[in-house]
Image (cartoon, rainbow, N blue to C red; front, side):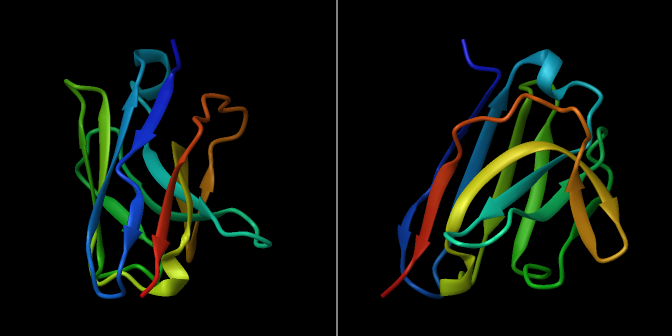
Length: 125
């Protein structure tokens, strides 16, 4: 049984929308701020969004702000990312993981080892 399973990726045209889901085990989810990280071919992994453990506050990097919306359902141990007005530069493999928010960027929690296989998002006409 995997601790973290991401789903919902796919091929979408520019301007389109997708909703990513992340289902996690309790040990991988409970008490953590959780977020979405993405990695495009040839680029470093980038944190895109992060939400507090209670779900009361979320942070976004500038490039996705006002287009992405991050939510969580603690009862279901699930994380969701609604992505709107998608751009080709959003193309990447997306992973959910525990996160920390710093001014201007989002980083993974040190020693968090529950990374899943990711879900591919491709934005192309």
